[in-house]
Amino acid sequence: MTAWLRLLLDRLTLYLPVVLMGALAMSTYWLARTSPVAGAAASAPAVRHLPDYFMREFAVQTFDAQGRLKSEVSGKEARHFPDTDTLEIDQAQIRSYDAQGALTTASARQAISNGDGSEVKLMGGARVVRAATVSPQGKAQPELTFAGEFLHAFVDAQRVVSDQPVVLTRGADRFSAQRMDFDNRQRVVQLGGRVQGVLVPSASP
Image 1 (cartoon, one colour):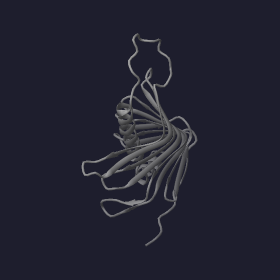
Image 2 (cartoon, helix red, strand yellow; image 1 turned 90 degrees about the horizontal axis):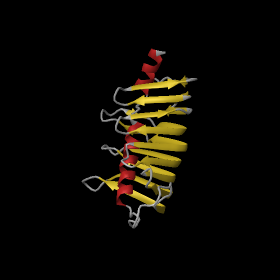
Image 3 (cartoon, one colour; image 1 turned 45 degrees about the horizontal axis):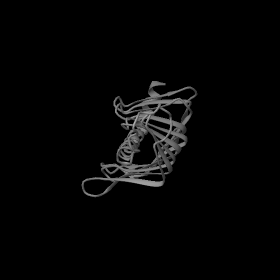
Image 4 (cartoon, helix red, strand yellow; image 1 turned 60 degrees about the vertical axis):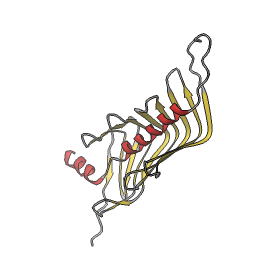
């Protein structure tokens, strides 16, 4: 199994979730900090889990120093909850470009970010896709996809976990597991429960 997982790591470029979640975290943090807040009340009311503002049919974009689009977060509705300092986004759609211009997209029925953007959850039909690209060494990188009902990213720790079934595909290769724990710093992925994988041999030149 160790050799099999090592082969899996070699075949899958698993930077994808951390890069994507980092982009979402930065965008939602900016969104939470720049959106209007309700005026201060004369006396502090009892804390209730109620949103202090809404945004509907919105899109937030971030750009680099050269004016190039870095990320875009859009959704049907966003709600900020001051008691937990969380931002909830319905029908979340996310686009992110890395330094080489490679596109990564994500979607879910709901995304939730904490106040400082250090934790982001994608829930309900979560799907993260890195478009096919070419590496700096000129090697073709096929499309890479993560799919499941739940992905939880710890951005500062560079870790992505799921306690629900996930499916990973890279080109024609496909892996499924009942749970996943990916540590980007250690370059280690743990697939738990019932794990199945199909590796398709590369075509002969």
